[in-house]
Image (cartoon, rainbow, N blue to C red):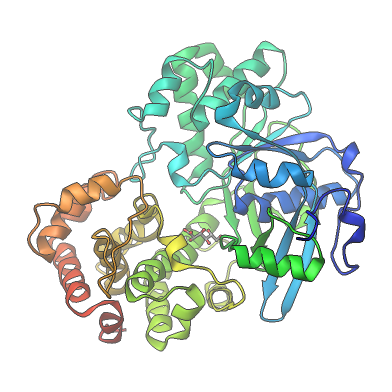
Length: 490
Ligand code: CS2
């Protein structure tokens, strides 16, 4: 067994591995990150690490896991160090990130999380808690006040349980201590992420102390952002291969593509790193960037996840290597692209070409099953919104509808080979219950469209759209995903 990566083993790494150029012991904590999964480690942490490398020591991170202790158990024995492995068909580059200085597990000590949020040096809180971590209704973006964690945090904030609860408790403690609020940057793929999180935080604050809510509304900042980097889950084989390459075992490694994009609305209430110097785009208008990314990248991803998943295609690169898979993605983009108002600086044709090349990166092994997770939270912004936009103009929606039908088929929990699987989704119980009495594809479509948390009423009232969905679901049920893709009109 090789040694673990740590401050002690850093010196023995091969020369081609980049390592922190700054003194780990002299880093201040400027950031608290909620939801320290692989995405954060490959994205925002890499940017704060670049700030530290540039000689600005203010941007060390305390990471918080909201549920499990596994990331803490991977990282703390490694002194918070981990490898960011960028992979492409041209080769790979390993870089050791030192920005994460500590990891807390919220359920083990909510008070320690609040204490971290109250550090005077903390100026920014970033979040990657996945769509469901916000407790928002996916169709409307409103706070789900009936969710157990929200009910608890609306009643008592002495040991917060939800994301808005932690943020409000931290902000309340800062206000009591005479400290300014921090800037809160939601880095999840939800539309209008900043304003939606702001509304949720204000609702929880209002329930406890209207003056606190007013202070947050006036003094706080919730910039909207678009984040982009493909980060497949790390496997044991990845860890073993890296250990072979660099001579130490790194249980916290993350693998990703060379591409990274972060667009942040220029709305901060305190200090920030020189983001622009590290490739981050600051702008007054994030919405058009966000919409393009959600509908093109993420929309295609979800279509690939369900159609590929049903067909037994394990990876995204394998799906786009199939002529019918690639044609489907292009058809979906043809449809979604007309619903966008691209920001200056975004050429859709170039963006699509680059995206296809990113999907085709065979060194990432990005699993369709990973993307299929939590579809109920993803569908509205990725597929439902562009369908509604095109229907309003009377434009065809065949490819987008096929993607939604594949999600519907997925809800049955059986793939085209008859293999059962677990539908990993917070609303899996609702979709199963809705479909229980339905006897055919059309009834299943009607039952699923009645779930208001996912589909706005306008969707189910569009008879032509409902009929199209029924035909697509029937085709998938009868012929399977690959045959349906092959007979699909482009
Ligand atoms: C993916 C995203 O799992 C998913 O839902 O679509 O994680 C995607 O890889 C990222 O948003 C890319 O920036």
